[in-house]
Length: 102
Image 1: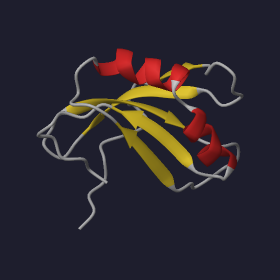
Image 2: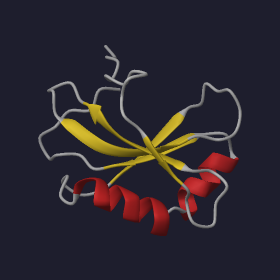
Image 3: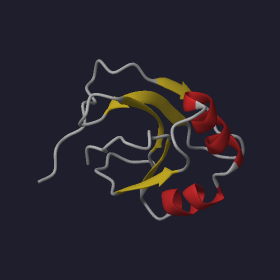
Image 4: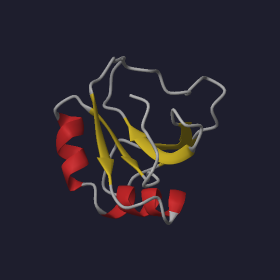
């Protein structure tokens, strides 16, 4: 069974440009099934959507939003390819014991 993440219109989002790209990143914290909030940097291609989503996850949650921002700015070549193909993409940092709500 798939459970929805707790992202609502009231979820705070900070938007930043991404170096070398026309598509900015939306930085936010998303609640997982177990109540833990994880930092995520979401990017969507132009257009109204909906878009399939590809998640890029690395590490054990250490570094938080700083790492999400650094990866989005410096290691996003593959994300750009997915964006051009019409996919939404996101970097996230997840705790080792956390469970994603997908």
